[in-house]
Amino acid sequence: ATRKSRSSQPREASRQDARSPAHATHEERKPHRSASMASLMPPSATHVAESAVIDASMDTVWALVRSMRFDWTDGVSSSGEATVGGAVTLTYGDGTTQLVQVVALSDLEHFVTYQLVSSSPAVTYSSALFKIEVKEITVSDAGPKVFIEWTTDFSNDASAAVVEDSRFKKRDGFKALAAYVAKASS
Image (cartoon, rainbow, N blue to C red; front, top):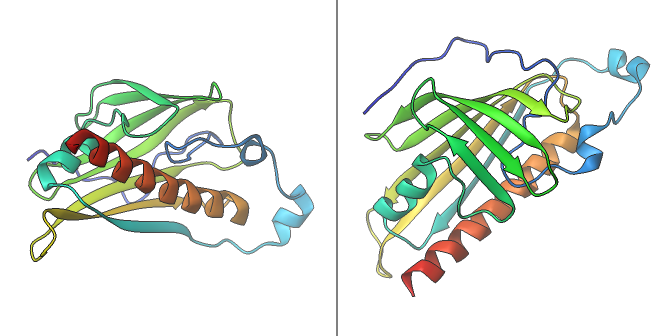
């Protein structure tokens, strides 16, 4: 297992896009409030956590997540090396390209953590740190299953719309993952 600790703050991404690999919309890339409204808003934590149960073995799901290729998601392609410190380029169906850096990876605990380095085009928030973790469900009458959780910690300049959009994209990603492994096993 390879593991690298991260600093207490994710690296700034120069107001770059930090969305999950399930497509950002044009609305996500433009400001949702004026600068004067933003100055009236108190800083807040912007944490998104979504989870699902997938009907597949730990080995199957972990191999898909660990690779950082997002093969199971429609409209996303990637290139690069999913190793600690390695960079992975994600390209979305709408033409958006993001460079993310793997900051932690554990084959023992089955998680990968990555942060946004750059994005084209940029969005309205500064940074985000993502984590996908897979856990085996050990008691199941219906075959192998895993519990998967996907979290994002956005910088406090992310709007509520961005946070909610990330939530729905994670849910769509889990549906796509479940369909992908079901199709592969049939």
